[in-house]
Structures are given as C-alpha cells and as structure tokens.
Amino acid sequence: MKIDSWLNERLDIAKEAGVHRNLRSMNGAPVPERNIDGENQTVWSSNNYLGLASDRRLIDAAQTALQQFGTGSSGSRLTTGNSVWHEKLEKKIASFKRTEAALLFSSGYLANVGVLSSLPEKEDVILSDQLNHASIIDGCRLSKADTVVYRHIDMNDLENKLNETQRYQRRFIVTDGVFSMDGTIAPLDQIISLAKRYHAFVVVDDAHATGVLGDSGRGTSEYFGVYPDIVIGTLSKAVGTEGGFAAGSAVFIDFLLNHARTFIFQTAIPPASCAAAHEAFNIRTSLKNMGYVVKGDHTPIIPVVIGDAHKTVIFAEKLQGKGIYAPAIRPPTVAPGESRIRITITSDHSMGDIDDLLKTFHSIGKELHII
Ligand code: PLP
Image (cartoon, rainbow, N blue to C red; front, side, top):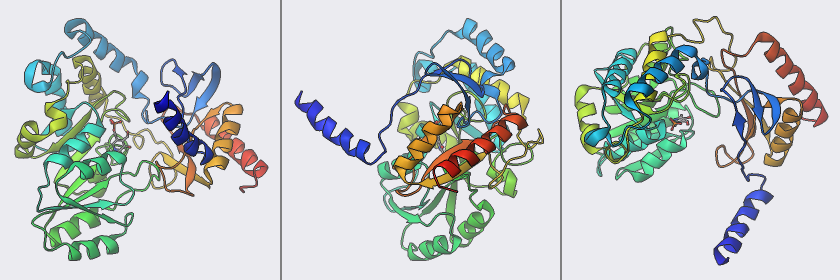
C-alpha cells in the first residue's frame, strides 16, 4: 500500500506533465491497416520499414526452423543456445555489412550496452552525440570510461571535444547512423575523417539505417562509402524480426564473445528468428530499390514537432479519431518542448495512404492552430 501511494505520486507528476504512457494492443500482423484496441487504424509509426515482418518468405523460413529447432534456444550462446542458424546469420550479417565478422545479441539495445560497457577502458573517453539512442546512453553509463557529449551532428563541436580530450588513452566516437526521433543522418564521412586525424575509433549504431540507406541497404557506411571500426544494428526494424548485432573485425568479435556481459549472460534468440532474419538478408531489398519516395533527411522517419507534450497527445488522439495511428513522442524520449508525432513510412503504405495522412495533418493542424 505504502509503495503504491509513493508510486502514484510519481505517476501523477508524469500525468501532469503530459508524459504518462500506457500500452496499446496491436492485433494482427504488422501491416499498415491494423486493429488497435478494437478500432481499425492506419499505422504510421512502425519500424517495419520494408514490410518484411509479415513477409511470407520470412514466415515460411521461421516455420521450417521452428519445426526443427523448437521455440526457444534453451541457453546462452556459450552454453547450450548456439545453433547453425545463429552462425549462418552472423556470416550473412558480416557479409552484408562488409565486415570480417558479426555477433548476435538478443536485441539492438543489448548490443549497444554490451559493446560500450566492455570495450572502452577506465583511461578512455566516449564522445557521444547529444541525440544518441537510450541504449547508447545506458552503455556509456555502464562503461568505466568517461563520456563527453557533443552537440547533435555538430562537427565543430566534435572537433573541439576531440581537442579537449587529448589526455585520454583512447577515444571512441559513438553515433546513431540515422537518429531515431529526428530522422537525421550522422555525417559519417566527416566523423571518420575527424577520427583519423585525432586517432579515435568510430562506433555507429545503424539500427534505423540497415536495410534503408545505401544503394543496397547496407546502411550509413554504404551511403557515405566509408568504413567505421564497429557497426551495431538491430534485426527488429527493416529486417522485420528480433535481435541485435555488432559487426567488425574478427578480433573484435572474439573480444565481445569473451567480455560483453549482455552477450555472455543472455539466452540466445530462438533459431527460428535467426532463420527468418537470414531470409530477410537474402531478399536484400531497400526502400530506394523500390523507388520509394521518402522525405526528410533521406530516411523514412519524419518527425513533426508540435512542442508542448499535452498538445501533442491531443494531436495524436485526433489522428486516432480519424483512423491514423501515430503516437505522441514525449520527454524523456525527446527534449522538453520538442514533443512530436513521429511518422514512419514503410514500403507497405500506398500513395493514397500518404495523401490521406497529409490531408488529416492539414485539418488537425488548422483546428489546433498549429499551422
Ligand atoms: N538503437 C536505436 C537507434 C534504436 O532506435 C533502437 C530502437 O529500438 C535500438 C538501438 C534498440 O534496438 P532493439 O529494439 O533491437 O533493442
């Protein structure tokens, strides 16, 4: 009882600030037209960028592996959880990312935390973009190295911070490839040339770029034609399944396998998920290959900043009333005063869907005096 009254006080603070969250029940396959809490809605917030999460070929691959391997992996990779599917998928990811090797984690979140908490040492520093994903921030918090935050994609600020951190033994620049809430692209070519000049390593989280950026969807590296030291990614967005990965040199992967606690102490993802993801890489499509028109910074993430958290919630509710599902994104996911509707366009949306979306945004924007 006591714990509830204390927690209610804390929840009330979130409610008053307009940032209290709750769950919505999505019923059916992850396609744009979905039944959400009993209502039919068009979903505009999914990360299933290429529509692969409901692709027949992935479902068939998972089903075949399910029959042979069962539903769970039964252990961590280093005990009883490893299978031929994990190994095949890691080879596939390494070849897709053009690295020597890759290592699977149970999620992209755990890949970031595992790499950042194990790789930099006490005498090192991590230079982290201001808008990096929460899993990067948490990895930095767990690391014994110091963390210095540089202004979002601001190369002058990064260079200043590189100058100010010369006393550290090693420096790691860590950045999202595509920033999840802003849809901006990290200037990886400039980051890598600064890293070369200042003898720093570069770690890129390509969660939102894999399958999306570059002529064959290989991510920010392909988009800029550069090679960072380490690439992290997830299988839960354009790849349409579950799990995360780190890719880099064979020595780095051997190191992670022996040091990354989120790898060592985690049950491996089921072989069936690996088989489905393997099939997704076989399909090797990308939004660009499909001739899809995306706005913003050449990514499918389109943030529409409303500002005030309460107003953003009202906007999202009005959208939902018109059959459009795009939830309000509020602090702490984004900075105070920067609440937004984050639209994501997937290959399953039609031009008609986009027209409807634009018309609805126009009318709600007028109604709420935002435009
Ligand atoms: N990195 C970024 C930039 C993300 O947006 C996400 C999103 O969830 C993750 C990492 C975590 O990936 P996962 O959902 O596989 O844990």
